[in-house]
Amino acid sequence: MEKNRNVFPLMTILALAGIMLVSLAGCTGEFSVSTAKISDAVMAASINPNTQEPVQKTNVFAPSTSVVYVCGKVSNAPSDTKVQSQWFYENEFITSAEITASGTDTFSFSLAGPATGWPTGNYEVKLLIDGKEKTTLSFMVR
Image (cartoon, rainbow, N blue to C red; front, side):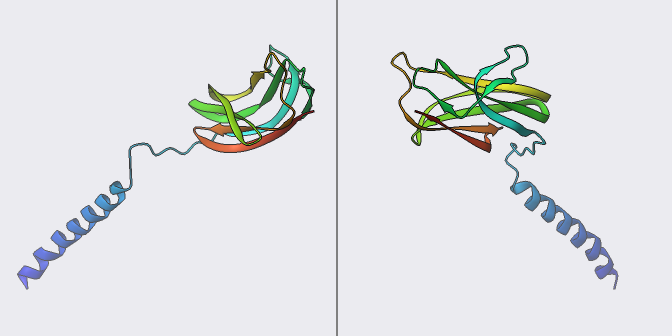
């Protein structure tokens, strides 16, 4: 009977250690849950440079448009939150840009048109937080 009493605490410790090892095995050291959110995202032909807010909202641009903007609001962003824009023309990647945000603030990204003018067609801008897509905006050039 004395042997069984000594085995129970040892088995309990081994079981708990096993559970901890299984739990830790799934961790890569890069686990992150962000509370950051993007809202009020719009395309614009112009923005207020002081506030980054849209002045002229639109999703249709002329080939002669010099700069296209996407702007919005990021909220609940922990420090060092990465907000990224990815620009596409007819599903082909054009370029990307990234800013670092924290707290709640407005943001904008811009893309200057080519010297020869924007090609007509369909465009998209994907907005990501810490590498995860949060929203996609579409616009046209015609």
